[in-house]
Image 1 (cartoon, each protein chain N blue to C red):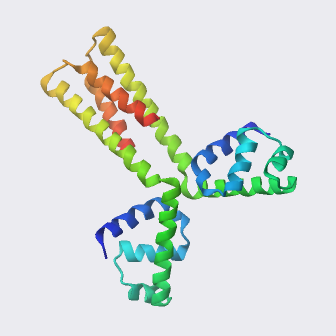
Image 2 (image 1 turned 90 degrees about the horizontal axis):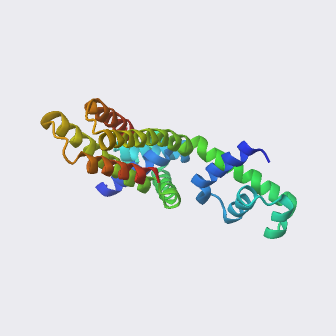
Image 3 (image 1 turned 90 degrees about the vertical axis):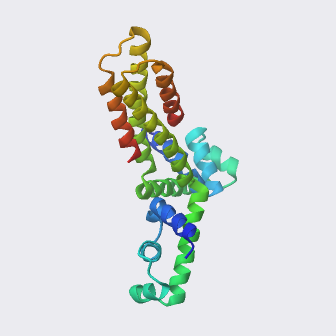
Length: 122
Length: 122
């Protein structure tokens, strides 16, 4: 199984799993999270190997179609990058004040935090 | 039309409109955003008044069902409250430093920012 595909499906599944049917959810979970083979899933869910394959393909298409429309993963990644950079900057400021007692240049740094917050609120 | 209903539909529409059909989107937009009557929408979209009513009811149900499954509005509101409080605290810190040159008690305040960031990254 291609690694990129596994990662893509894992992320999409995280966001949109509630929109799949119970059977689709089980098949995706066993295949992508538990690393079961098609044959093992077939035994487990008591559907044919071809049925498992079709269920997985259908579920993948559904997840990708929702992402095309809602872009939740894309928006989440964008926002998360901003949040991480904000967090790192706050920790930097804390270290500077705590360790070095260095208050120089604090105003532009705080203003930078402010800007990132505003961007996150947009 | 009940105000709470209008607000609820407006917010749900913002989040999930891409999941409606073109006709449902138009009807919801005209009714909830442009404040058209059922009769006006009926003329505009060239469907019966009953057809407009059914389309709106169906669209409302779809939007509510997606929110029940994905909780995007709920998650967004929660995160936004945190983001706003973070933003206000950053502005407070800036004012204290800039206006009063007051560096006292800065460490716990920065640590508080850090905590909120961590919560937002969860």
